[in-house]
Image 1 (cartoon, rainbow, N blue to C red):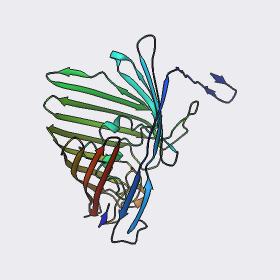
Image 2 (image 1 turned 45 degrees about the vertical axis):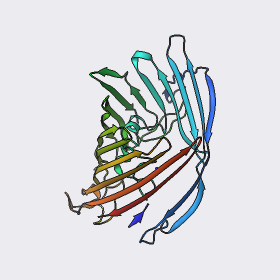
Image 3 (image 1 turned 180 degrees about the horizontal axis):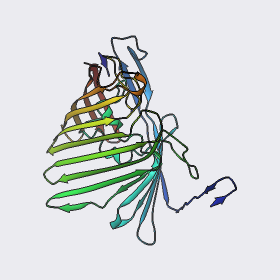
Image 4 (image 1 turned 120 degrees about the vertical axis):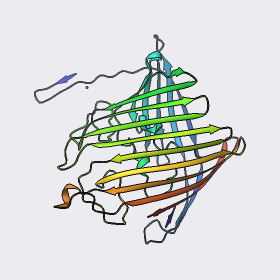
Length: 342
């Protein structure tokens, strides 16, 4: 058991680049902190029985402004503790027409739907050797795509929010200005999601994403989807979520009783999780979450004459107890996470 995220024309090629820039007010923000982590397990893995201190620093730059027609422009760039790019994006707010976001590491539309459970700290699989398939929903289409958010519609005490997304080349590559992606295993990707929030405290959401396969013999298109329901009543919040992911990978089925790797293992992943969070007071909150991620092995193109569902399902089960306490601008957060195969 283991315990514990350019118009240029030449004779050879043509390219078309459209770009725009807008002056805006810029601000800088950041955070700093210490971390301590221990990891216990019953294998000889590199992480087993490890422990150590670290830092969780972050630095962010943001800009915002308004155009003459009333539209708004906001931009953000964030760096992690290693001073590497964490996310960068520009959002165009078009008033009653909604908003469009383009960038890198934004999470895309899927960020509003994956791992969407009430917790005190982080998702249930935070700290685990590998993330759940639920937290991989749409993770490969948050770079170099268009993510549209429609204006919220209110009716009968409910607010309906629609998200639409399109990625010309779903290879999860960050493209700087003037760059273009080359041939990859995937063509375009399309996704859509709807969230309904009611005055009673009930929130429902459903999301789906499809990536068209471009290359790889024997592989098929990728489909992933999820739905969730959360309910808040006073200081208590509860949630339930299921997910489905078929990576369409052309690979041999994973051996029995071995964990599979999302997007590289041939087969289906079906996830289920629930959680409960409680705000003890304005400063202290606690939560408990449990998740099961079942891998349904399917034979891939490289497995010769083997076809069909030939390997027993493997379920990764995770539990997480979390706590967060705030004192002004300082906070203390902790979790204990367990995972096992069954």
